[in-house]
Length: 79
Image 1 (cartoon, rainbow, N blue to C red):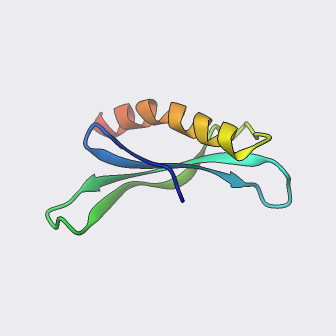
Image 2 (tube, one colour):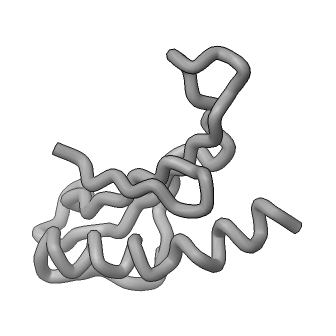
């Protein structure tokens, strides 16, 4: 299951994913905002790799880095 948190009215998904052709993990984030339809969320930040210059030895470390990146991403979205 993908870690999900509610942060400042956004639904944030952060995950560590195994990098293709590697035994290392990348940190990924996607962010959704509420829409007029309560059964739908707007994808305002499609899933992308954060900390792209870093690879992690395990999924938990990658997820922790993804979570650390979220406040800066949310600040950019609000600007």
